[in-house]
Image (cartoon, rainbow, N blue to C red):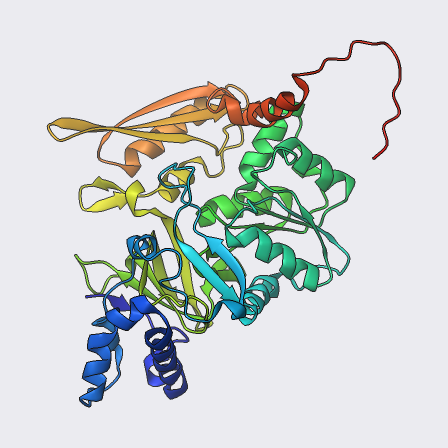
Length: 435
C-alpha cells in the first residue's frame, strides 16, 4: 500500500486530471508491449464497471529499473520510430558499470519541448544574452542536453562544459566562468568545484564571480547545504530533481523544490502506508514516447504540501545508501548537515559504515579542513554523536588528501598526456599553429 499526496492539492477531486491520467494509461496499454501486460487486469476491472479512483490506480503494479533492463530497448517505446526525436539512458552510476545501463528513455519532439519549458521557468529572471555554463555529463543522460537547449531557446548563451569530457576540467569551468562573466552555472555540487579551485589556486573564485544563479541537479543537496552556498556567495541556488527516465520532475520554487504538474508522485513505505517519507514513485502524465507508470525511482525523499499549494519534495539519497539506526534511517543529506556553518571545514566529505551482524556498526566520517581548527573538529564530533546511536569516528585531513585524484584533476591531466606521450618536441623555437 502506498500513500499518495495529491498533486495540485486535489488531484483525485479534479475530473480533468483524473481523465488525463486515464488517457495516459490507455495510451501506454495500447502502444507499449510491457504495459499491455501490466495493465491487463486494470482494464479488465474497468470493463466490468469498476470506478477509476486512487484505490484502483494503486492496485496497478510498480514499474522498476529491472523492467526497463529486461525490455531494453523497445519494450517501453509507445510511438513509432519516425516520431522519436531523442534518446536517453539512466546513468547507471549506482553500480559503477561502464556498459550501457540498458534503461532506455525515448522522447518525441513534444516530450522534449515540455521538458525544456519546465527547466527554464525558474531562470526567466536572468538577462538574455547572459552566459550559462553547463557543467553536467552530456552523454546519454538528459539533464545537460535539455538544460543546454532550454537556455539557448530562452536567449542565453550556453557553454557546453561536459562534466565527463577531458576538455572540461574543473579548472577550465572556473576560468571560463570568470572570462565569460557567466551569470548561471549548472552543475551537480558547486561546493566541490569551489574546493578544487581553492586547492589549486589557494584563493576562492566564487567570492568574485558575477554569478546570479547556480542550478543544481544530479546529487541530492540538503536545504542547509544549498542555503549555506547561497548566503556565502550571494547567489540563488536553485535545485532540480531530475531523472533521465522522466526529465525534470522537481523544479525550483524559491528555496524549495516543487513537483511539476506534469507528474503524479507517490511515496512508497511498506512499514507505514500513510508515511510521507519513503521511496519516490513517479508517474508521467504527459510523455508519449516512453511513458512510465508508477515507476520506483530508488530515491528516498519527503513530500509535503507547501503554503502555496504546491507539492514540495526533498530528496535524501538512494535506498542503497540508507543506514538503519534504531527506528530511523540515516541518509547522505543527514551527514551534509553536519558541516553546515563551519568556516574552516570543507563540506566535501566521505562516510564509511562498517560492522553489522554480530559486530557493532561503526560510522566513520572523513572530513577535510582548509586550515587546522580543533574547535570545528570538536563540533563535528559532537554533531555526529547526536546524529546516530552507532559508534562514531572522525578523521580530519588536509584539503585535497581525501580525494586526491579529483582535487589534483589527474583524470583530466592523464587523458591529455596520452595525446602527447608519443611525440616530444625539444626544439627551441616558436611555432605558429593554424587550424
